[in-house]
Length: 221
Image 1 (cartoon, rainbow, N blue to C red):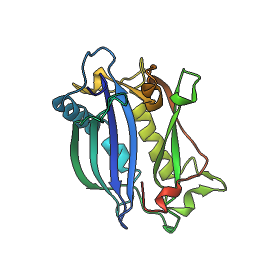
Image 2: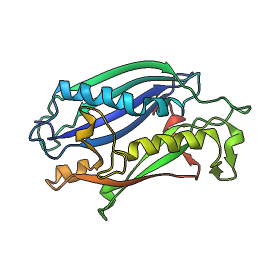
Image 3: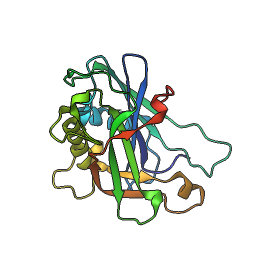
């Protein structure tokens, strides 16, 4: 059986040249005694769309397309052979709404990251997301993104929406399904060892330092 109360959430977009851009995080509802069914996966995807799709679109250039929000059961790594899991694909198919700058020739590997922190000391319960490419060279300040630039502000606005999923957030996220979940880090290795594998996030931070995601140069996300 897939893991109880745990959902993998993927925001999937594609750039004008066909480069896929994927951002993934997990949400958990520890009070449930079963894996989320297809109806629950669909409900969470629809709620995420209403909650933060607009902010995600703002990180993308108009020639990029926000394609899907995918919500998926998480396979139990102790089950062999690997079991089938259910997935819901919430289609959007909308262009990015970021404002194109005068310099759009920066490498696709250049991006901001959002760090995910938990109260657990183990490195297994830390995470990060490499955000969509920051294509405008005028928003670069030496080794960092300009804190007043549209790209970094858009990334930080998305971070703020996800921060509403932290337990006891001042303004929690809403939705008939999503409101029952908190955002978390999932450690597959811990699950393989039969150890606690979910760490609820204590916070998220948008980093100013420019990061490079080399896999985008190779054509992966």
